[in-house]
Image (cartoon, rainbow, N blue to C red; front, side, top):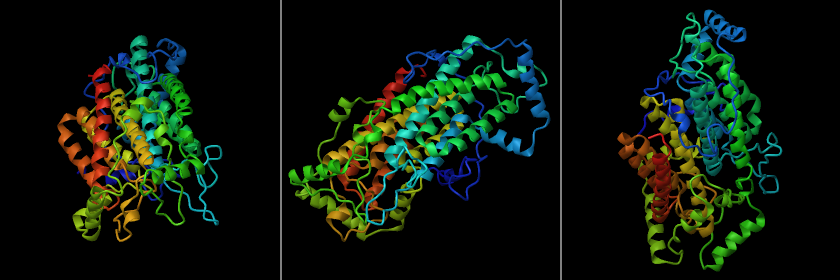
Length: 512
C-alpha cells in the first residue's frame, strides 16, 4: 500500500478558496531532474492534434536583440533579489509542472465533489454551467465528471508538450544561462533549448482546460499560472518570451480539447425525469427489481446518460459491443447466493475490512477513485524522473483509460439498473455510504482494473503491486456491503480490457 496517499490530500495549492486547513503547497518532492530529456518527443503520436505544428509558434527574436537582452536582465535582477518565499516556490514548482497541475486539479475535484442539498419541497437542484457560482456550484465533481476532467487536462498537456518539443528543436534557442553567464540555473534545466518553455506550455494548457471544467475558479487559476510563470523565469529555465510563447501554445492546443469537450455529450448526461422513469420501467418490464435511490428524499440518479459520452480510446460502437453480459437475475439462485455473501460481510465486519473500506472509500469531498489512482501514479512517477512530456504522456494514458472506464461502467449500470444489496435486504448495513447509482458494474473495480493495467505497463517493476491494489480496491466494495461479487469481478475484467487499449496506444505512440 502506498504510504503517502493520505498526505496527498494536503498537496499543492495557493488556490485560497480550496479545502480549508491545508498547507498551500507541499515541498515533499525532490526537484525534477529528468534522466532522459526526450528530445525526440516532437514526433510522438498526438491525441487530437493532426501534427505537432497544427498551431503556429512564431520564430523567437535573436538572442543578440536588445529586447532579448532585457529579458536576460530581468532574470538576473530577480535572482539577485529572491526572497524566502521565492525559495519555497522554486522547490514547489521545481518538482515538475505536470505533477503540480495534477495536484491542483485533484484539489479542485475534492472541493467540488459535493452533492447538492435538497430543496424545501424535497426535490434536488442541479448545478448549471450557465450559472456556476449560484447554489449548487457547478460542477458536482462526482466520479464520472472527475474521470473526464483528469483525462482532458492531461491529454491537452500531452499534445501541447509534444508540440512544444517540436518547436524547441526547430528554433533551438539556447537556454538563458547559455546567453548570459551570470544567470544561475536555480533548478535543473531540462534540455538545451527553451523556446517555447515546456513548463509554461503545460501550465497554459492545464489552466485553459480547468477554467472550462471549474468555471468558478478562473481568477484563482490565473493567479496560480502567474505564480508558475514568474517562478520559472526566476529559476533561469526560461525568459519572458519563452514563457509567453509557451502559454499561448498551451492555450491554443487546449482550445481544440475544449471544442471537443463541448460536444462530447457530457452536458446531457444528467438526463430528464422521463429518462429516469424509462430506466426504471425497462428493468421492471424485464422482470427485475429496479434500482431505487437509497437517499431520503430520493435523489435523481447520478449522470445516468454518461454512458453515451464520447471516449478517447473506444468509439461508441466499441462501447456498446463491449458492454458486459447481464448480472444474475434478481429472481435467480445465483443472485440470492451473492446477496447472502454481501450480508455475511455486513454482519461480520472486522478491523481489516474497516481499514480497506475506508482507505478506498473515495467518497464525498475526496479526489474520487480516479483521483486516488492519480495520486498513486504521481507518487510512483517521481522516482522515475520522467521528462515533463513523458509525465504528461503517462498521465494522459492513465486518465484516458479511466474516463473510458467511467463511460463503459455507467453504460452498464444504467442499462441493467441493478439494485444495491441494502435495497433488496434492509438488514444489510454498509460500512460506507451507498452511492446514488445502480450496482452493476462496480465503478471502483472498473477504474482500478484500467489503472492497474496501464500503470503496470508504464512502471513494470510495480505491476504486481498495482494489481494487488486494484484487487483490494475492488474487494473493498464487497467488504463494505455495497456491491455483489458479480459487480466487482465483471468490473475488473472490463477495466483490464480498457487498460489494455491504453497499453496498445502506448506501444505505438513513439515514446517507447
